[in-house]
Length: 231
Image 1 (cartoon, rainbow, N blue to C red):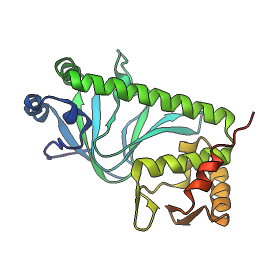
Image 2: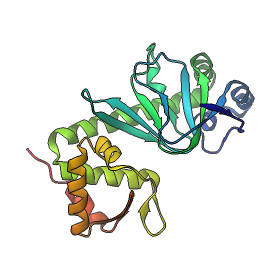
Image 3: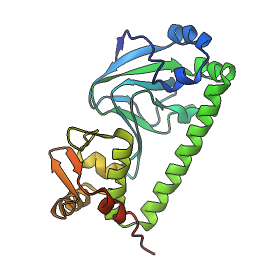
């Protein structure tokens, strides 16, 4: 990663929004910004911990090994979001990996400074606690879906989640472009199954596709697929 000179984005950054304004100069003095390229691995599962990251520009996928040759995408971090925070609590290695989905900029700060920031800024600490709680609930929901929801429903849920997080643009296109493999990793499925289900959804006119672009034509129909559970 190459260093980049950027001012703090106090309007969207998870950390800056939760800190006292008086603490912003300390953040500016201790953070480093780095340019990342599409597909670049920012850190990998098992790496020794260096610090905490935030997305300044672009999107990052947070993923974990799932079997010898598979991965499960835990979440996507977009502009302003924190990632690498799962090391809090004394872990010395990253339990997940993070990869840039597009060219962008990430903000980095050491663990010592981040922990000092949490001690001084109770608002940030509270927001982080709420974030952990929401993340845990989402993880539990995802594991339940993987156990009980048919694969078509899981893929439909993945598309709904992407639309909710990234919104739509240019006539309804979901605001992030993913490869079929990344969509499979996010839905807890395989490339072949995602390819088949996407074709089914297109034939049913629930979605339209153009390359990596996906348009949701019938949100209610897509949502109904997530209501069908097995067992």
